[in-house]
Image 1: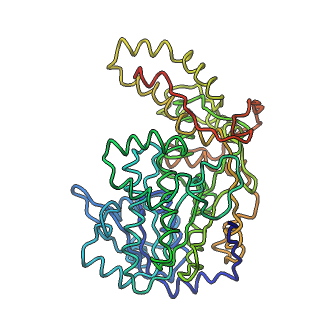
Image 2 (image 1 turned 90 degrees about the vertical axis):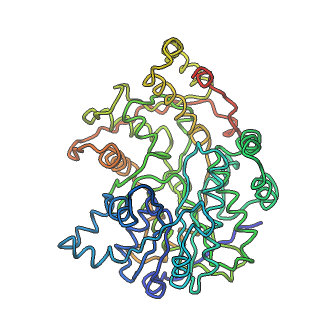
Image 3 (image 1 turned 90 degrees about the horizontal axis):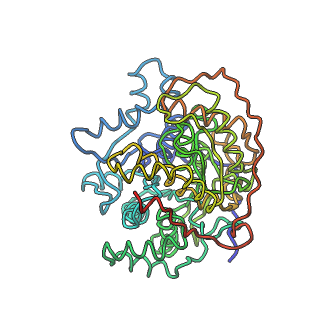
Length: 506
């Protein structure tokens, strides 16, 4: 089956959001969701209302969550600075926000009858950014958030009277089993067979059976439950697309990292995916990693992702035979290797003033094949593991040893393999975009400048320490060590079966 290549005329973003000016956004407190919301409010003055699905617990009210968890984020500093007072910001921007109580894990998103009717009457565009991005989730949890959650969102969407677009945010790594391949913007056959049969089977399984299926089936093919649950969702969308009659588009980002330009270079939030690697290196938690230094990674700035998501709404059309798909990544442009990524991390974090929470001044990002990593780990931590066996209540030591193994294991599949994600549809969309929505996907990334901004952003916004932006960092590259290719680099699929000894000892 050949991929559908789309060509788009001049993008009429202003016209689209002029007519379709009421948005329903889930996941607005997350990294990507917050970036989408900020871009909407800053660059689309035509927007009159944004419904936000929010959970509340304890004494917090919906308005508390809007003020503290959303507008309390530093991402809105640039937008706030455009107004002379807090009152003006509220009158021009904040009043557009309508929080509604709900939960992605409840049927019809847990909306009250009143809120459900209001949304279905009012909303023109739905953007589902809610997801669990944890690589460690048990399969039942991942399915609840990443498969059932989107299906519940579509149930809400099907009653909407004036829906122009419904964006499903997925991930490039739904096709992670296709290691070493050039992957088009299309849905390939599911490796486990009929997606409806898989989904039906999983929904009927007991907790014990689903955990067994996770270990014996899912993790033999997919690197984690996150990628499997996202993949299953896409296949269910494809199967149900004609019956649902919804204007769905699918946007697949790769590894989402700090902003390249907007609202400020380096803005970043949360400790997931690549952010976890940067923080682990910066604070001396992890020095050695499992992987191939020459392997190309696929990092994509979050502001580029947000722009493509907002542009994708303008081409949604329920009369298509299948939903258009947009990869957002750099692996087919000028990707950075994991070794280069490590060079930038080492140079920055060895040059800046020591972070207060750093536990070791051994700041390295070095990669080794699985067996060598295991050998070095046992040498480095063998004595401490024996100490821990005598003093099992030493929580700090246990946490340090666990992190030194668990974090590299989380990245193992991604840092030991390569994928090349075609971005033809996204580039075509970007070419047609007006200036304020151009992502620059067609341009080469300036990795030197970007990694400087990324490290600085993690330092300022995640580690939350004062940053000296006048500091000149020497990024003279250490040699990237040649590594014996993994089977995947020789044209074979590889799924790690390595089980660290430390897991049993802890």
